Length: 77
Image (tube, rainbow, N blue to C red):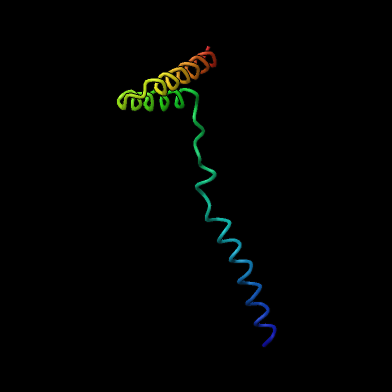
């Protein structure tokens, strides 16, 4: 009787760890953003700032986007 309880407990411990370890598959498939993708995101946010009338923030976003595009272009050549 004690042997059955012990085996059951061990089985539960080992299977629960295996199940929890296999459930986090989304962390390994994250896509790394390139400088170009980051620049596109900055331009989109700058356009939103322009619509809201926040021109200084928009200008900063455009400058960041320009720097990222220049870096991206250097890597291609």
